[in-house]
Length: 578
Ligand code: ATP
Ligand code: MG
Image 1 (spheres, rainbow, N blue to C red):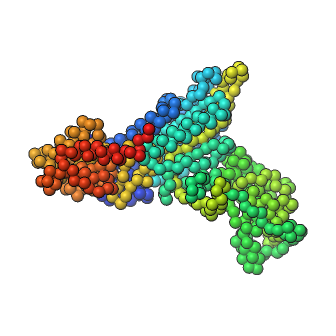
Image 2 (image 1 turned 120 degrees about the horizontal axis):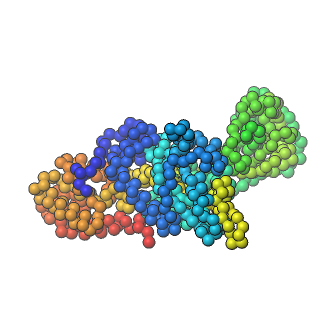
Image 3 (image 1 turned 90 degrees about the vertical axis):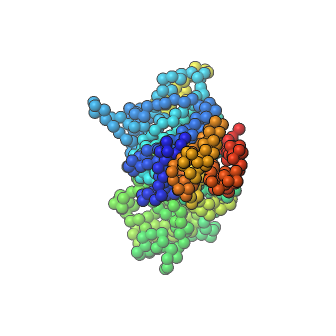
């Protein structure tokens, strides 16, 4: 391709509303353009990158035995009603009406559609296992579309859905996708790390997110230095805490004491009280589907709502209002406690088990209780891990202090169990002729988010450093003269023809621009290899070959094609997997 024949508008200035580096480079390098918030047009260079990522994804899905399908983006609401997600997922729906005023949903995901298809088509254990995937545009009414392609209203996703006869077989399907994802991200030149992820109301153990560590990421992951533990903070656990207090503390009876003006955990840590936060019990009041519950944590710990969702089996809960709390416990936040509370279900975090000498609110403004023994004085209905892990907590696997970092989620693999197959009637006859629901898994990769995540990870001060597998072009020839009759251009044409003939995706910068502009643009867009051709080096019979971000080498004109192909091999060495 010749530069003058394609459309790669680069920008010198950084567009004002681009916040993160990958978003800036996406626009500056002419990969995409914004239509309006959350909606982007891919320009020719961007489409080339997209198609290459999609090809890698397709190859790996096919290799893993998944079958490509293409489902409608427009979905009838009835299937969402049947799966039970019409209400829970409704806030992300884009809805449209047809001429008969009937409502339709622009698909944010396709569990309901594929399960409906499978319910109709697969009836016998002989027809399993199956895994269907598609690469398609998804629509989500995100609360905060931002960061370019990272969180868009409309984006391209690869989604796959596996169907198996047993839970063990579903585990095998899950592992295949996990392995395929590892290969996909490696081949895209992206260092994406699998981390244990929250399973929400689905419960169960098997969900991993593939994340790209980045300051701009919207996810937070917890990990141990050696790499033996990594989890999304929504899911992360730590080594259990030692119980607070001593035998002597346990012998003391509860005592009420005055705490005038105390309204928070912090207030109570101050003089004259001086009760450290870890000696206090934090009492939170939530309303779950209109019924109140108490949630107890150590005063220095904080609630993880994702974990609470898993424990409650529903995400339909909210903090109680001050009025609701007053009516329920006859006190204001700051003086709340669970001692003697029998009329409200109590959920307590594991770290409070067996703690002695604790302090909690007395359910009377300005009063607290001390010498509380959790196992003696509280009627806890359910103990569970409810707290958010913090940096410095100990790793559940190795015992080392855990670390926290931000990350971008690019993919997600999830064992779904039989929720959708039961709801949507995806049943089959097993070997003994008994009807059973299929065991499902679902697997997503954000294709457009992955593209931008590569930029976020692979760039320097001059621009993008595309991995050779997904670069819009792998080689850019930069003749320093655009005059067709110049020797420079003739050599450029010769190398261009030779590289093209040997299958290299080569771009000829035939623009009549100053060398500085051409070099800057080539670096900004980030072609893996650049061949510079100028009068000076030609006088010595040389051209200049340079790997993006590497050093310049002088190569004889006659050896240029060979040298470039060797260099390209080097660029691809770690990206092409067996
Ligand atoms: P997030 O927590 O970032 O909203 P999600 O859990 O909603 O992601 P999934 O429903 O698992 O995401 O979708 C699969 C993949 O699709 C994600 O891993 C991500 O790469 C991509 N994705 C999800 N939402 C968006 C979006 N609004 N814009 C671009 N890509 C997205
Ligand atoms: Mg989301």
